[in-house]
Image (cartoon, rainbow, N blue to C red; front, side, top):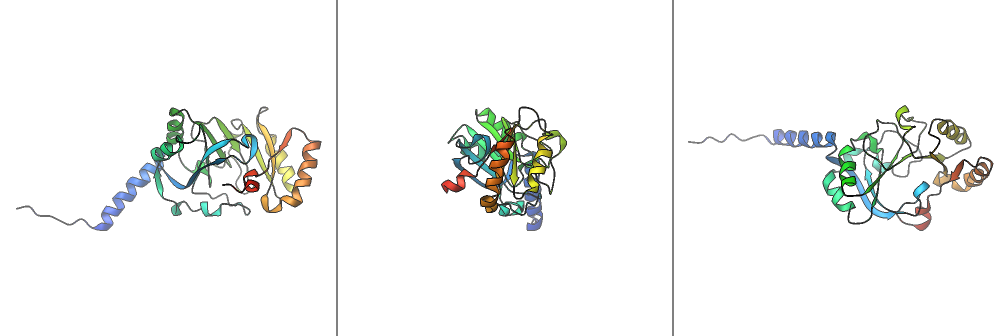
Amino acid sequence: MQIFIPVPKSYICSMINARIQDLLNKGEMLPLMEEFYTIQGEGFHTGKAAYFIRIGGCDVGCHWCDVKESWNAKLHPPTSADSIVENAKKFTNTVVITGGEPLMWELDYITNALQANKLKTHIETSGAYKLSGTWDWICLSPKKTKLPLAEIYSKCNELKMIVFNKNDFKFAEEQASKVGDNCELFLQPEWSNREKMMPLIVDYVMKNPKWKVSLQTHKYLNIP
């Protein structure tokens, strides 16, 4: 006679949660907030068609962040990295991984899979966490609330500084002094304060032509 001993639901749930956490730790799953095909609106690659992957989770805490709903990773479902790659390769050859702060997660697995499908991998990051992943383009956007780790400065292709007030020009120069000679330098007005800061940025760039102006053109175009 066989005797069946019921397994408590709590035990099953804990096993499932442990398995999901293991896959998250390996980067084989990621807390996906959204993914979408659009036009890159900012920085060096402005105007280029790109597939965006927005990963949940961020503790950098910018008060002017325009995607604060991304901060709590628990609000965004753990999603198979393989399925994300399958979606991305249907559209274009450029993929931008953003957040939140994407470097809170292990990104070797997904970037290797993207590049295996001949897709270019770009990241937008504050640099506050250890760099993982294999990248064709690294856009570093430092924040005063949680500064970048030293290792990323020599590896970034683009430095994008958000200008909310006059003090941010000094911060921008401090950060620019740490990147490589070939790093592209951009000043971008914080969206809610753009009318006040844009004239100051234009004047600053004209006096300091190592910098370029970046605008959030996707917001002017009313696209994601």
